[in-house]
Amino acid sequence: MKTTKTRERRRPGRHVPRKRFSQHFLASEWAKKVVAAIAPQPGDVFLEIGPGTGALTLPLAATGTPILAVEIDRDLAQRLAGQVPPHVTVLAADFLDIDVLPLLSGLAPQRTAESSSTAAPARRLRIVGNLPYHLSSPMLAHLVRLHRQTNAFADATVMLQREVADRLVAPAGTRDYGALTVLVQLHARLTRLLDLPPGAFTPRPKVRSSVVRLAFGPPAARVTDDVRFERLVKALFSQRRKTLANALKRFDPTGPAVLAISGLDGRRRPETLQVAEIAGLAELFASVHRPAVL
Image (cartoon, rainbow, N blue to C red):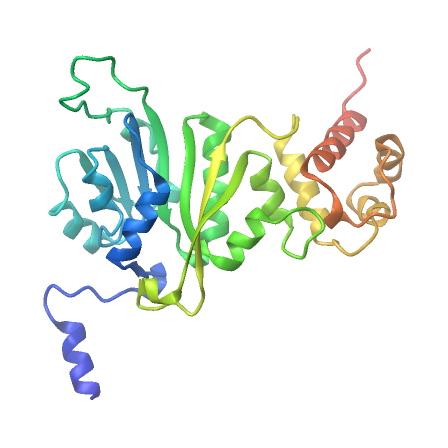
């Protein structure tokens, strides 16, 4: 039996999923459901993260939308490049390490025969992807950073481990509400679109998955110092069961004074704070540390 498996792995043209890339390939019947949830529209230009074997790339491409597909596995990238139509560009690279905007700038929405006599649809940059489970948090942080720095993307529709999706959409005061929730919800409105069983992928992952849309927009609250805000968020949720008074005292010596100014109840737990309340605390810390103007 072991001999048979070894022969299958070495069969020419067969790709063996690589654990270091967390490769789980979406079945075609589920890919159709995901594409329907993405709902591509005229004018859309897609950045796809981790196209793999093209389960999403090919049906998305069939709608005529231009796609930049970034695949870290060079073997898969080379194979997919030979299967896609001309309006799809496949790039072998690590999404976390490249500047995608110059590459996307050359992609323009296709004009259909029906629209050739009318005005071209407005160009809209969108992101899709099956994010590697072991890199979902840094990937999400990078997506938020891209939006914050460029304001170029309308949304991102991504497949994630169900537990990560639960954290993203969690309301304040619940068990799943945490630092990741706050950092993403400050810049995006979250919607769970679809749940996928392990059988939707090959090989089957040990966890269930979900498709979530991040609709980017103006911040949910004013934040003038993103670094301080992120430090505060991580400090609060590392002590989520302590009282707010104790958590702020540990975060900064001026914590008691900031709490007094904020009007918040120091007996509350950090996990009960809304995004806007945390942003307000960050702004107060920034103000008390701002040098006085003479």
